[in-house]
Image (cartoon, one colour):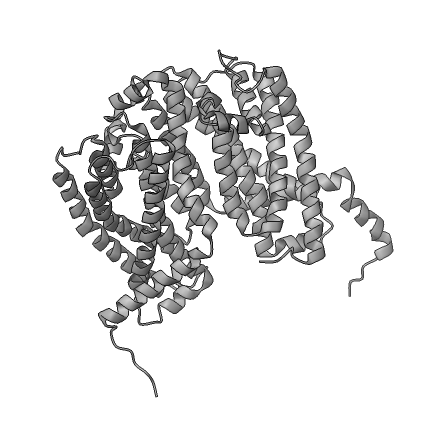
Length: 292
Length: 284
């Protein structure tokens, strides 16, 4: 019979479960799990690629119907910049809502969320692992969509790369924070989160103007857009990458927009995670972690 | 003593189909948020290219649009596209998701043990889907037109409704065909997402199919929604029928009406028999 020597192993076990190396190991394992699940469904994998391309082509062709030369128009780099850079942020927000927020619901329905809370694994690593999947998967989709779109609408303007990357990182950080907050909301509202995710996606499509300039919005919506930090992310990112053409950025001077986006990128993950922990504790107290 | 069941009468079949419709209606009435979203989505969806076009085309937006599509009324043109998209999506989602849901919950196995055929139940789901899709898309079209301040009832409204009516039957034939694929590959969400966009792209969601490359255009003409969308746009906005006369375009939809449902039934039955023989009905 095999016996477990508790005294000799307890210290080493403890060391394995705490500290930064344990956290990193948990994160890698969880990200690997998410990526493995994704790769096990090739139909879904291929379909999502195809779907994005078709949406991109449909919207691009629609935009070109307003150009004098229609679908044969070339060299419209301004249009390409507005649509492509906005589309990148839209893709990330959309995938964040589903991959971080809705997948918590998936774990809840499958009962694995309850199991996770019985293990010593880091719950923060669980949320961050979903970000890694979003970064890998959505990042690849964005690059391919951007190439496709720019080949159709015109060469993509590519200016101020370091600052553009900084704004993108801050905007994504804030978006992921919003994803944590949505995950918290999912724990509370359960199945309704699906409808809410759709609603948020469409609210973003209107208020953050990812597919058109803010100037196209009616004045009431332009005012509303100014209250959404991510609007400044979209505006600052595309204005910077386009080399600040006349009229861009539209919402505020670029210096002000960078301050807003940086604050959003630094604060939102903290607020989002705080909200998630709060809802998590409520769910544990009420015993609703595995409620269907 | 064993009870044997004979072939159900027409009244019994109709009753079973209507019971399925009622069941679905009752179910969706419990989720009013979904219904509201279904009305909001096509309006927002059409607003995207509208706002982009207004911003890039400026004062010339309507003229440029007319040069490319045949009408200056881009609001109604884009709203028609997004609302036919709603109808197409409803057909694919409701039929395929019904089958997948029954399969996942294990009730599909039970359905195959009753004297009611799955086609009867699919017809009930189709009736529910048509009612829901038509309500959502017509409401969204009218609301969208009112928001963007264009007249929703211009042109030949009756003819437009004829194109929708005649286009629905082949559309559901296609949805059944797609249902067979779902039964076979046991996956619905990803496939429906992809399929609704393939069909929407081919039917000219926000643009005339004339802008597509010749090969893609040829495939687009094989899709009933392409004729339905163009028929509605031509009837309401005068963008031009494919064969120049409305009755010729409608005749093409009649051909689809005869062919698509029969082909859909045939493929669906064949797939059903295949999975019944190979232990696939109740597999998750």
